[in-house]
Length: 120
Image (cartoon, rainbow, N blue to C red):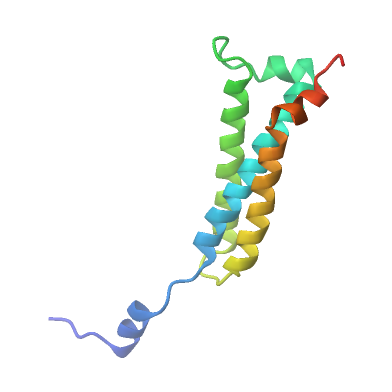
């Protein structure tokens, strides 16, 4: 039979740190903005459009979604490691993420990204 120490009880009842959650929230914003950037990039360059065509049936959308998702995952891994065990201002992270999501939405709005279509 083992004895539970006061330190073990304190460690188990300690409040959770906000870093991992903040990392996920900010990575979502970064991923959204990155995906939007990729949409514009594909419109700017025929070479990028060809390179992003991973599946002919889907076209460059296959590359945009694949690399956009990878951007989110990379951002999440980096931020989660940076903020592991730390308290981060969720309010500040949330506001930055909303701006990044808004940029991502703007970049994927057809009148916006079509303004960058190559050959115009």
